[in-house]
Length: 493
Image 1 (spheres, rainbow, N blue to C red):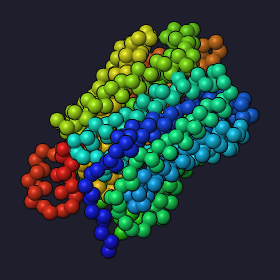
Image 2: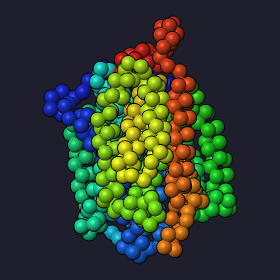
Image 3: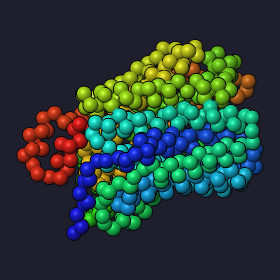
C-alpha cells in the first residue's frame, strides 16, 4: 500500500518570489470574495437586462453557491493528491473564464453556467492555507493563516461598493471585464510566486465518493436555498431533503469502506476535527446574517420609520469599515491563538459576534450605531474565521490539510445558506405595507439579529468543548504515530 509522502521541511521560495508568496495568496482570496459579491448590485436589474424572470436571475447566485459547496472539498482533495499550486491555479483560471463568459454575453443561461464555473474559486482559501502550512516556518504560519482567513470578509466588503460604482456609471459588462483582468493577474501571480508543495497523499481519486457528495449537497443546498420560493412544505422541497438524507447516508457508508476516501470520516469523527466543523457551521450562520440584514435595513425606504433609504453604493460603504477591521484584527487573532490556543480565539470571536448583534438590537435606527454593530460583528468574524483553519491544521496530517480545510469551508457555506433561508423566513413573516408594497418590519430585523446572536453564543460554547493542546503532551510523547508527531511540531503555529 502506498504511504503518504513525508512531511517536508517548511521553506518559502527564496528571493523576490518568496517575499510575494503570502501577498499573492491573499490577493487570490480577496479576488475570490470580490467575484462572489459583484453580482449582487446587478440582481434588481438583471431580469430587464437579460430579458428573463427574477426566478431565473436568482440562479446566478444559487449556481455559484452549489458549485462552490461541491467543488471545495473535491478540489481540496485533488490538491492533496496532485499538487496544491496546480489545483489553486486551475480554480482561479475557471473563475476567470467564468468572468470572461459573463463579460461577453447577456444570455441568462450563459450567465448561470459562468457563475457555476466561478464557484470553483471557493476552494482558493483552503488550498492557500494548506500551502502556507507546507511552506512557512511555524513562527510565520499563524499570522499568515489569519490573514488568509480574513480575505473572505475583506473581499466582500470591497466588492460590493466597487461593483455598485461600476454598474452605476458604466455598462454592466465592464464590471466583468474588470474582474477578468484581475483574475488573469491572479493566475499569473500564483504561477510566478507560489512554490508547488512537495507534500502529497498518493492514491486513486475517489470518483464514486465525489459523485455521491455532489448529489447529496446539491439536493440539500437546493432545498435550503429555494425553500422560501418553492414553499417549505412543497413536494419538491420535501423530496430534495429526503433525497439528500438518503444519498448522504449512502455516501457516508461508502466513504467508511473506501481505502482512499474523498473525506476521511474517521478523522472527522475525532472531537478536535468534528467539533471544529460544527463550530464552522454555526459561525457561518451567525456571520452571514449581518451582511444580509444590514444591506436590506439601510436601503429600506424612510417611510417605514426606521429605513434610511440609502443607495447600493452607500450601503457598500457602510459595510466597508467591517472589511478594514478584518484586515487590522487578523494579526490579533494569530497572537491570541499562539498564547491561548485557537479554540479560545474561536470562542472569543463568536462571543464578540453576539455582542455585535446585541448592539444591533439596542439601536438599528441611527446610521452610526448600525455601522458600529456591523463592524463589531465583522471583528468577531475575523477572530473566529482565523482560528478555524488553525484548529484544523493542528488536528490533521499534513497530507490532508487541503481536503480537511475544504470540508471546514463547506460547513461554513452550509451555515451561510441556512442563515439566508432563516433570515428570509423571518422577514417574510414580519412585514407591513408601505406604499402598497410589503416591507419587513423593524421587529422582523431585530428578531433576525436575535436568532443570529443566539447561534453565535452556541458557537462560542461549542468552541470551548473542543479538546485543547494542554494535557495532551504526555499522550503524544507516549505514542509514535505520524499525526501525533506532526501535532507536536504544529504547537508553535
